[in-house]
Image (cartoon, rainbow, N blue to C red; front, side, top):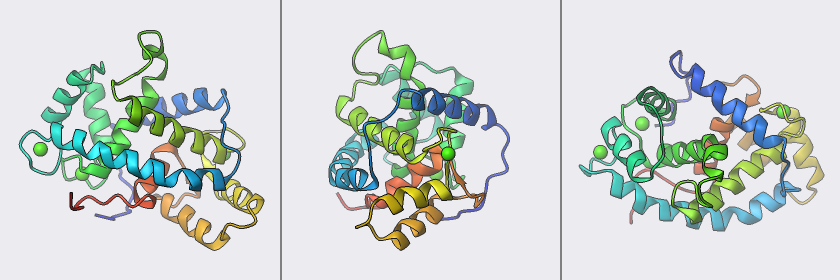
Length: 215
Ligand SMILES: [Ca+2]
Ligand SMILES: [Ca+2]
Ligand SMILES: [Ca+2]
């Protein structure tokens, strides 16, 4: 856990490109979030909702190993009626298995579901109101997407350090140093930019979700 080294694996590049494309598309629609304080005010609700996600996680961890393996993930998508090709599922699995232990832990699972939510944005909109049959969580995912869209003020799909600084400066009451620290935590590969996936991983830590938390 907590190993921040950049992964050199190429296979997820295609998926990363699709995520970026989906983020850019979503960004063109704007956001209702107007300040960092608005995001922070939503933390308790996000936290509560993501904790409920634990029950879903446990349900799909069929062998109760504490992690979701590739086969369990396939079953999971089937049950949620999320349609992906085998190749796509492999890519998503790899992209979200941040510590490369061939299992999706709880915080990795939250990121995974949120990415699925983002990627399934367009297709499912026509079918039903809920994309994945978990409306509560989807509302939270939407808040996370909106928060990212707000922070990425030039809408290029990445939150830069300057964008973070500007957002903090606009919020006079907020402690800029803490926010800067948070930016640095988010920027896993230390390239000065935070992509949507990095943002999500950081978020699962900010709201206090731990892997090995007691029920
Ligand atoms: Ca398992
Ligand atoms: Ca893992
Ligand atoms: Ca940007």
